[in-house]
Image (tube, rainbow, N blue to C red):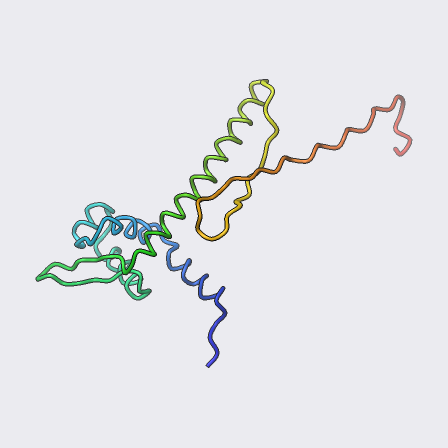
Length: 155
């Protein structure tokens, strides 16, 4: 039996994470195991919807559940999930911080102030180390053609 390529398995993993309720559940569980009632109170969705999202997380193996009497507790299956969420926050912080810088430059240009050259970020990261922002300036715009006197000969 041939297994799917690793990149395809990774894509499926990230698709499984691609729901706001699932991300919120994982964020809440970083603080330790929680009963369903606490998750419901914090997230504010219907119990059936939360149950559906918890089932997906359980089947994927990144969340585990245990029963203590009538209460079901949910917890992260390991610390790697918390590490992944922290890495995502670091990456988003860099990306959003740079966007704010670009917005500031655009606002300066709109008010007639001399803006700094607009730069676009590239994340220069290897592994899961904190991201380092590198910027690449935009190329200079080509000069406009000189205006000609008289009628346009091509017309």
